[in-house]
Length: 175
Image (spheres, rainbow, N blue to C red):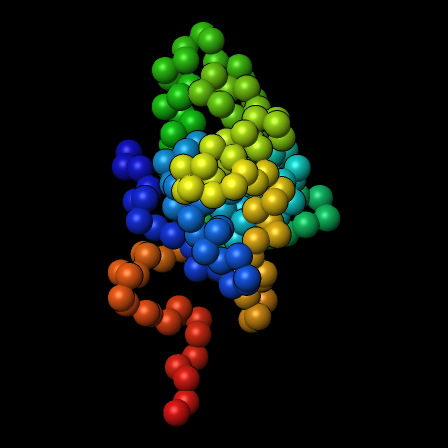
């Protein structure tokens, strides 16, 4: 199993794009990275993400389905959730009889579901790793505004400092 490439960064829209990008980049190898992507890019409320069960994840349909909410996912997020499931299976094997069985998507290395306090601490650490002020998991949701097309933001490779590349969903500017 390969880990996500830490050079993968989001391409959200909004005033705090750089902050969200930096946090997600710093957290690329963290077990809550997928939760951060769901909250920050797809704007799913943090309590919904933390209560998410595997039966609510529908990768073939590119959706999350929870009561009262259907979230359409892009292919990079579906791949990230698949990677997360693989990591969780490895954690289950490593923990052996110490594994606490849970249907939740976001659990620690022993199977215990993350609480909002645990998740906030992880996001704060990721923010510190990016040289930023503390922020909570819920706070990530406020950093990016949904794309004007109503679609979701996508993960893409971070451009080089001197490089300025338009996102795939942007129309070329007319001169």
